[in-house]
Amino acid sequence: MVGADTAWIIVATALVLFMTLPGLALFYGGLVRARNVLSVLMQCYAIACAMSIAWLVAGYSIAFGDGNAIWGGLGKMFLSGVTAESLSGTIPEVLFFAFQMTFAIITPALIVGAYVERVGFGFVVLFSTLWMLLCYAPVAHWIWGGGFLADGGIFGEVGVRDFAGGIVVHETAGIAALVIAVALGPRRDQTKPPHAPGYVMIGAAMLWVGWFGFNGGSQLAADGGAAMALTVTHISAAAASLTWALWERIKFGKASLVGMVTGTIAGLASITPASGFVGPVAALIIGGIAGVLCQEAVVMVRERLKIDDTLDVFAVHGVGGIFGTAMIALFGAGAWVAQLGSLAIVGVFTVVMTYVLVKLVSLVTPLRVDAEAETEGLDLSTHGERAYDIVS
Image (cartoon, rainbow, N blue to C red; front, top):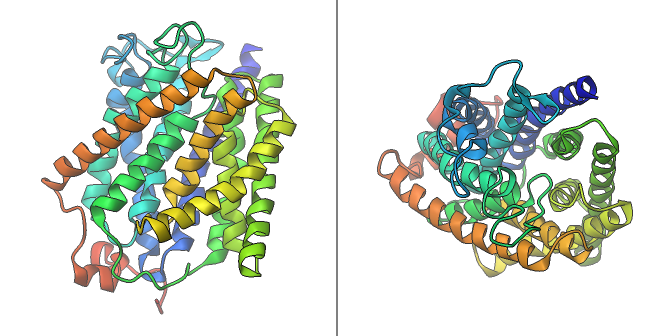
């Protein structure tokens, strides 16, 4: 099965990169105003490039190095000691490096949705790089790299269960998004609707397809476990899409395309941590609840907390990932103490680390563009380009 495992993870690696480029870029790009669409595409593209280099330099070593229970160390910087013949389980270690690199790319890219239309480009690149190295990579080590939250750690023989990133990816990105949104303050003009709902749907569809590699690939083998992870991923996405649309129809009398595909992402985020531990019926329940839960979380953040998390990163990814992680315990595949305890530990760490990095990076490069640049749009003011001849 070694050859089959390798072939499948090569495909899965490409699928997860496809989630960011172009999936997430189009999903987010369609949600902003026309004058800012290129800035969103640029942010996602630049993050993909910067995280790839940072992962090679130190990120992989911090997450999966042979350090201690808290820190993977720097022994594998620049893939030191890793050759084409080195194995990680049944696959080449360099392939495991590449697969995990795509996770390190999409996690800070998810945060983009919180600060679009008003953030400084230099801040995006520098903050994302440092955050991946100092927040994402340590959390990945704690849970996936044999750290203190894994089996044999502080929760005993049975540690936290997070199959593909409910905590590592979605909780960290969602909480970081909320912290940055608070630090930035709201956009000056929040009245415009998404400029291209069609882009949003296309991007969401690409994310849905790419998620098969995200969750199915996390089995790290071409076997029945990967097939089940892929299947439950699809069921949860479908269920959440329908319940989000239904809940919109009940509340507002109409179901929107943007709402339905946002439900898709909520279902995908919610099943991510549980996809290796539950079956189709549990996935149907998780997705069905997620479509309503995450929609109500959007209302909570926007209308009650008055936080301009512009594209609802916390409500969809953060709440979805936290919910799915808790559901693992509910369905008997994990221990409540380990699941909830890990959520709390990672949550606090993410808040503190994100806040510190925002303050430090802001000393080097502006967090927010000035009022004139924001009004003109980031496409022209920051990048000197327009997406369309006529913009709104």
